[in-house]
Amino acid sequence: MKHVILGAGPCGVSAAQTLRKNDPHCEIVLVGDEPELPYSRMAIPYLLVGRIEEEGTHLKRSESYYSENRIAVRQNRADKVDAANKQVTLCNGDVETFDKLLIATGSRPVKPPIEGLDLPGVHHCWTLADARNIIDLAEEGSHVVLLGAGFIGCIILEALALRKVNLTVIEMGDRMVPRMLDEVAGTMLKDWCEAKGVTVHTNTKITKLEPNPGFAEDSLLADLDNGKQVPAHLVVVAAGVAPNVDFVDKDVVKMEQGLVVDRHMMTTASDIYAAGDVAQGYDFSTGGMSVHAIQPTATEHGRVAALNMLGQNSIYQGSLVMNVLDTLGLISASFGLWDGVEGGDSVQHVDQEAYRYIRLEFDGDYLVGAQVLGRTDHIGVLRGLIQSRIALGSWKEILMKDPHRIMEAYIACTQK
Image (cartoon, rainbow, N blue to C red; front, side, top):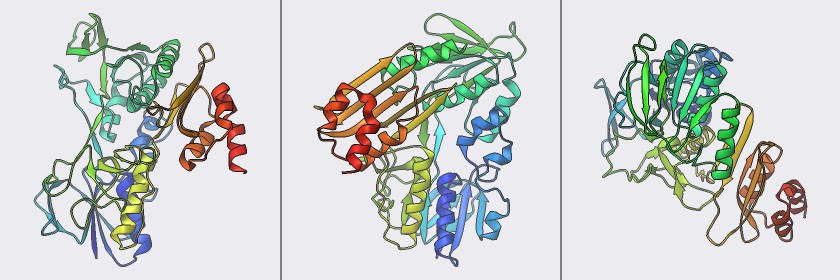
């Protein structure tokens, strides 16, 4: 049995590892399109601030792991998938046949239609090559513009700020991390960042980037739609991502927000599976299908897909939408249906001066979503109550009066 895995990130490596663990004899080909050993993008911020070397980003500590486990690593990229003949054509013309195929090609950063975005000094923060460029340009005291304050943008924000640059953040939404935090929490996060010396413009767009030789050699000038101009030695673009699925025939493999998969992670094409950022899989919170592009979901996708590629009946239980950020020492987190459900109840408590906030969302007497800012003691409890769907009974009314009693509610409801 020959298994081909397209994508050498955490999802693809998790799948390869699972295949080998459960079948010592199968053939495994792992295809990645970067000239690096498989690594984790989530480790790049630690590289930027010097907490790890490049080797620390690698998913396996030993360079010989892949050869020792007979996992053939191809540094290439898929150009076309022929589902009928079970073949993948790579960009150099090579053809890999397969018995089972896993598409785990992840996402790529979106490039907004902004004039000047192709100038020198403009980089994404997505690959190790990007990280090397940023390290060269983001020196202490340099001026850096970060385009985007979403989840990924805020991770990059912290790394840049810790490099002691003069940082300006441009976010087109009305608050920071708008897909994770409500207006109250997102605005509090903005206030926190500005108190730490980061300039944040929300409800703002970059209209144009242009050379700014009067400021410094090879520097840039960012024109904003609020009339301001910001000089920069470096512009980092974090304006969202899109799934890497251009090589997939959408007439054969159903595509919506991602490649649609069933509870076994198989697509609409027989023997072709998808996992990670490209997969639109089962969402625990809604009971529907969604793309949940975070590393823990990707690794679990890869594991479940691999088991099913081997013929085991492994059912994916669904991902709980959960995001946790540490932004310059302020922890923010959201879980499940954090913005509530129609007809549901909600309670919030805010302490503006202490940068503390909690919001709970209920559907009947079930907790279905939550947000917290400025504290970590509730994170595990909130996830547990939402994911286990424990009926709160009389504790719902208690939490509606005082949402901080969530730990007491958890203990009472789980020890019945």
